[in-house]
Length: 418
Image (cartoon, rainbow, N blue to C red; front, side, top):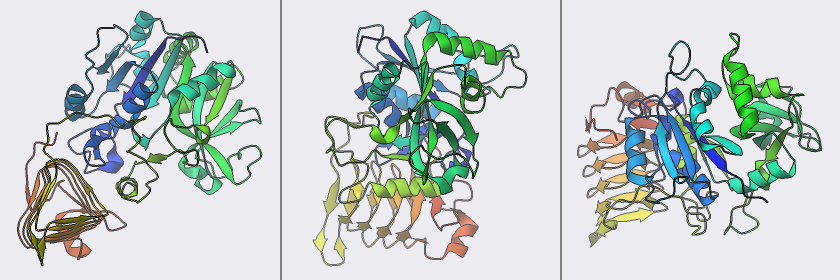
């Protein structure tokens, strides 16, 4: 494949309202995941591992935590002008000087960045999902098909068609229609039990992208969104193809490993994705050295487990424990612990996610909970065993996951949620 100039835009400006209260003080892409990571680390790692180094991150709501993470973990030290990760706030370039009005408007307000870079291709990816993807393989598919637009698609069971924007494609992968959350959306050719769900990740020929964004900006009826406006309008006017994500392979993974993608749009989905990491053979492999998940590099000491006495033994079983943690006589089972977590003697924490700097007091019992950063739990606290009582104090999901650290939290919480 000829050498192409590729410019990437990462859409990281969403409110993430369904992840509240984890998004009360931060943008969704800045929500911690897997101990030491942030959700945005997945898309940025995919781009860097795929050899794409020119990246603009479009930010908007509650961006301070995200900006700090980008500063700490994603600042290049290279000298080449085409190697950068730069956060970009709304430029107010629309006629009414508005915030980003949709995904397409976010790129339109930054057309000058495309004009300055003179790329052949523009890749536009969201920052809201947990997945690994070799984006070079999608670019190769785009070029092989001589496409003007390529949309990443993941096959899902047709009963979930009402949850997604569904792509209708012919047997060659050419897109012939879009169907937004329709139960009777067309299935994949040759696969009557599944539909193509759009992943919200796109590759555009740069010239075609600029042309369509300018056309869309002039439309008063448009919501200025790729999925709702730009892509449906291109059906029959452009060479547009669906890229089957399940054909994507990651260097260093065994051939039988299936591609992993999760939409963590709700607390329950987020919780389940984090719990996936604890498996003996996890569906999401963080231990592939050929495809590292990159993040900020912290000078944390190793985790420590203290005391070897019956009834007072620091233990972690089927869990992920990040740097700086100290389990001084407490038991952690089936959990994901962020950095600098303390679990004191006699405490038992099960099936839970603890963000950085949480402190669990002696003899406390915690079950099926998510603790935001800096929560300090007094001794003898019980959370997750009486949901009716928990609902009076915390946020509790329909499935019974208790979220501690948002509003109405009686335990001590530091409000520096970065």
